[in-house]
Length: 271
Ligand code: IPD
Ligand code: CA
Ligand code: CA
Ligand code: CA
Image (cartoon, rainbow, N blue to C red; front, side, top):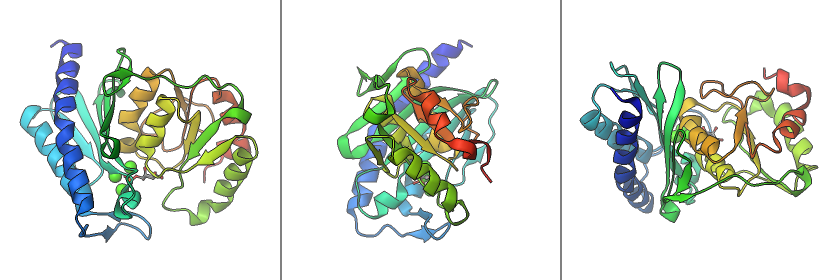
């Protein structure tokens, strides 16, 4: 088996398939009835999350039946091939349910032997844009190359963050971070869809991003897009990035050490 070729086949197939996912998400958001259910007080799930997962999984099973699949809405399939799909069928569900157009989907492919993400596709329906990258081949938005910003000074940076669903016992740390970054940067934004946050660091709209309590499906697909766009990712204390470690700093590279420093002692204490 030629691994690169197998990855390319999956990548190209899904680049052709994602317009269907975008159409489904757009039409479903326009309908009045989202059938909202609650996983937690602020953690929602709608019929669009489930419908999108179903569509993506069906396509993977139809085309690549021996691959493993992990999806946020309950899919956990072990297959015999080396590949594992890591899927967030709708990232930004709270935005989606409030009719904000800031949502995407994250479709990542991992090589299970070394846990490396080898390709990522992030469709952004509101703009009819697709962010995509294959390891070693550069990062793109709708086939046009993208790259991170060149900002080297925090004072000129636009940062982005996200707040975990479970925020009560974390509120002191979240407040510390906010104050610490807000006083140093040009601005801090909270978009509400980790996939978009990371793709927007990849294309230089944001200079850096941080968030804790992220899941593999939030990070896998955009991580390869950001890496291919020249960005850097690590945990809060600067250790190596993994889609399976929930706290993340993502940056244009130039600001990375400064971001780690500004986490203060909290970078070692995430309880
Ligand atoms: C959430 C979004 C949000 C982030 C949360 C994620 P979901 O994903 O990415 O921006 O703050 O941590 O769980 O639940 O909308 O797919
Ligand atoms: Ca969710
Ligand atoms: Ca998500
Ligand atoms: Ca989701």
